[in-house]
Image 1 (cartoon, rainbow, N blue to C red):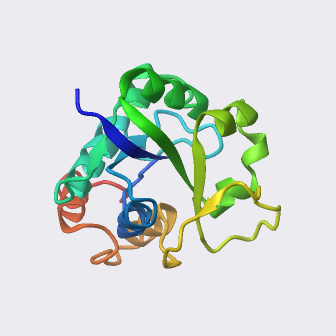
Image 2: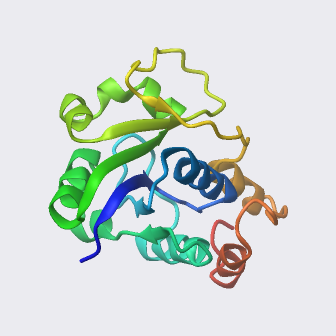
Length: 191
């Protein structure tokens, strides 16, 4: 097993994955000097509506999105575990199964501002370093001072906006990686 100095854990529904996810991950690699980022698609997210696309489709799309990036990988741990995908369980999975010196949990600003509502949030803080990406966010709850801000562009792209555009018959070219766009078309997702 390869020893990885620092790894990032980037969870989400990825329904669908878009270029904003990739930009945020790339900035995290650069700023934190991560050796690898694991994208972890949720089975059932605890803080969001149920995913529109099936776990299989979301997994296939995120795999297509990360192909060109040698330092990006996909973990199926939450989908395989089933049920609600709690971050604490995912972190424990990585601590038990990935040989690394440090673990960095990557979350959006909205999640950082509501982190205290997460299951076992204090335990998560003890086990990993928490990093957040700036987003357009209405919530003004304070972000814990120990959280690390990732200097990343604020791209007004979201999976929900992409799904809405597709449903309206509008193009999402350049908002999702080309292989993901083709996958969406072939499988008639979000229409």
